[in-house]
Image 1 (cartoon, rainbow, N blue to C red):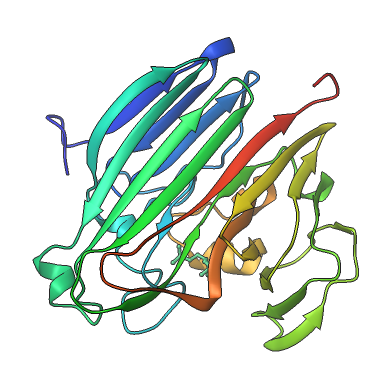
Image 2 (cartoon, rainbow, N blue to C red; image 1 turned 120 degrees about the vertical axis):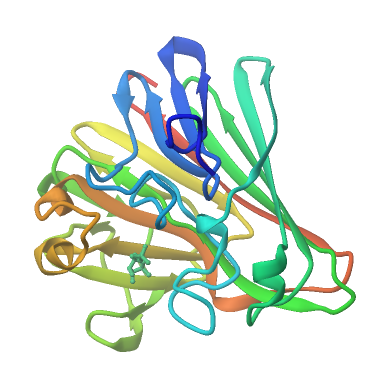
Length: 280
Ligand code: TA6
């Protein structure tokens, strides 16, 4: 887990046009993605980077359980040390690959299956793609929920819009309601929001200050929208009391229903984030 100075080991990839992506082996957590000269992800100033808990920000990986349940919240993938398989340049892109399998702790957990996760991070000048391949390496079938918990950095939550969720059904974890339908083309955030939009078709986006980050995905059916706002921000020791103003989580996942794999079966899910500005 820890490098020589006690810090966590990480990989930094440099790409075209001074693009950059930083990935900690702990949780294979992306903690920084710079594109077109700007940081596009939010990492809390109080995030723990010593392996003592999941990193608060970037793109934590949720597997095999989204939310609370028989395993610790959001499962074990985001707090395990992944192996770095390799990095390479490919055309105008840079790629890093990571892998995770079961260990004694997971085999002793409530989710005791043999598995392989292969995580591929690919960055080009204006894009970042994150794809997970799930493999059932057990003799039994198993099922799981999984999500990429992306924290987008925004200049101000008050001038941020999330689009692409109109007409989708959602469960509202703040109001404790289900089967609501989103009526808005453009969602703005002015309070604690925690919603699971189910079976969302099409492209979702985050817009701020004349810029737009589009979120395209495959095999991830659902979208989670989260902002802790002031009341929840104060409850998190690894999140600054006013940091809710500079982030929004728009998370791709399959969480409303489980993914099931038979022995030997593999399945891939992923997202493609693209920074679009007025001139591209
Ligand atoms: O993003 C949705 C959510 O499930 C929220 O309910 C909130 O708990 C958030 O994840 C953060 O969870 P964490 O375990 O990282 O504090």
